[in-house]
Amino acid sequence: MSAVFSVTLAYLLGSIPSAYLVAHARGIDIRKVGDANVGTANVMRCLGFAPAAFTFAADVAKGALAILVARHLSGQESVVLFAGVAAIAGHNWPVTLGFRGGRGAATTIGVLFVLLPFHVGIMFPLAAATLWLSRNYTLSAIVMFATVPFFAYFTGAFFYLCAYAAALPCIVGLTTLARVRASGHRLVHQNKPVEIDKRNGNAGRTRSKRPRTFPVQKNSGNES
Image (cartoon, rainbow, N blue to C red; front, side, top):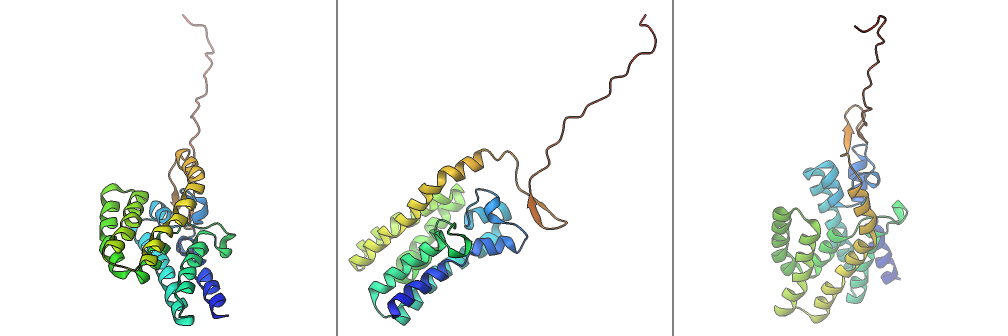
């Protein structure tokens, strides 16, 4: 029973929609702006750095807490690993948002940070620097998730943790591939940026200006 409870609780923790709650506090439905992704990148795109940093920290905490709680309740490493998968699944397919969530990168970092704290701690600044220089979230995630398993393996970490660290980001990759077409189509066809109505705090579309027309004056007399 403790195993089922641990995995279920991990899923429910992952289902806490951090990005949605942060945006909702500002009167914005994050699912209807930007690329419609319920994650840090879209919060950054639509709301700025501070809300995005809070969202990222909350999503990392979800993954880390799921592992810690499962480890405390069950004490079985297999259950702990399943709890990590459940937390990411909860973020990507949350019951709280009709099973339409984010892509799970930050939650995956939280899961791996508890399991491989030294390796994630060393590689995270590299991924952060990649993001700072390239402004590309996908590239920074690739740097993070591609280096941690190899670094863990060559520094003597348990093989099952190395394999887990290599397999876990596949959930992120598959989710990204499944949604990238719709997200890319949305961003490419968004000709106007998101504007926030400061009077009521809602995000809305920019008003399209109608072409001005001028009345044609009719000459009352004959032209000379």
